[in-house]
Length: 100
Image (cartoon, rainbow, N blue to C red):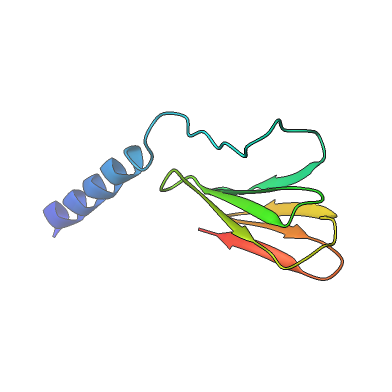
């Protein structure tokens, strides 16, 4: 029993040590970035959008992948918040969430 418990503990510690790969991931949005943006960084994710854009970008730090989606809105993003492994963007009519 002690040997099994030790092996499980050892395996879980080793997995935590190698959970993420080192390096940078680059997002090209096609133009120069201005200060007119909203973003929030959670424990394992990031959400980002330019204030007057309907394109929202999200980054998953577990997989190291960027994703983007078009949101049906013409309103400006007013706030961005994150807590734990969740991040969100908000405007006057909707909220967009990412969680990992």
